[in-house]
Length: 421
Ligand SMILES: Cc1cc2nc3c(=O)[nH]c(=O)nc-3n(C[C@H](O)[C@H](O)[C@H](O)COP(=O)(O)OP(=O)(O)OC[C@H]3O[C@@H](n4cnc5c(N)ncnc54)[C@H](O)[C@@H]3O)c2cc1C
Image (cartoon, rainbow, N blue to C red; front, side, top):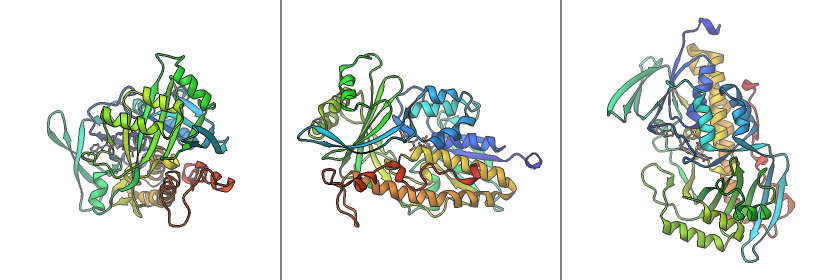
């Protein structure tokens, strides 16, 4: 059946994790794809991004897409334990709230995951330095014409496809054309984050001390609730420590569409001084020795009821901007891509709307529940008010309250939709 169908073409906007994953999934479904990415070159090296947690479902989905599946093992560290703890700022002590010994995530650097996905595509698939500008759907709704600007030459090009995939992130311009009033929602806090690279000093006293204080580092995702926000700590391959500190603050005024900003030395110094009042000295020293910590404002948005319009479909952060507390964003992008690929393979381009309808019906409910869970979990761990409960107090919290913090409580945790089985 598949061979008798004409080869369909998709234009994917955005060449980050959702975009390159989608390219793989659609190629596997027999489609031609082109990816438009505004960044001028592939993000080589580890200057871009920081750590992420890959779940076991994503790992399985990626395996057939990549030319060297063994690289997934080589470039990741198993995180078999989720350890939720609290820190007493005055006594500088920590204590365990709850622990999940069957966590089964992999810790990876964003740039490593992106690299193995991208390098497994033919080089002509991703057009770097191509800024998506606009699109128009044909009257019969059977094709879509996409205009993009080639940033190096300022020339505008047009590409016609059967399907436009919006993988252009949480600020998606494509989503805005359908939902101009749909706004991102500031969480009430920002994340300071960084990666300490100690490869040039493997015996680093700072890291030795850190590992004494957090003894299961290397196989554990530590979540730590302090007097001012909460923190995350885990190790990456090649002697790197990934850390994040979420701090409640008013919404920052970052330029343009950015949720990340470069920070001044003065801002870093103030953050470190504040850290000394919240975290144990071993953790603060890691922060202090990290080159170029950066600041992420945390946003999500109210879940969407619709993920496609005619022959335009949303995936990844464009479809469901989500706060990071369920460990979902990257995993959802990969799952979206895989489900979309299978729906297109099942229905073919002739029945595109059935394919997109099935994709939407599988993903919309899951995305809604996971976005709302992550939002709630963020507020609990940041000790921000919720209408139906008291503020979380790590000193008095009972076992049930502590166990509720575990990531596996997220609805559809590691759920595999039947279309992928
Ligand atoms: C450079 C980078 C580094 C990141 N590092 C981390 C990390 O360390 N840890 C982590 O958990 N998450 C990280 N993320 C976020 C993470 O990739 C996403 O939250 C998640 O994987 C969903 O991915 P996405 O592809 O839907 O969205 P995004 O990753 O936000 O990607 C959207 C892509 O669309 C492109 N784009 C947007 N508008 C246009 C346009 N008009 N024309 C062409 N292209 C456009 C952007 O340049 C971007 O590459 C990073 C994202 C980026 C872009």
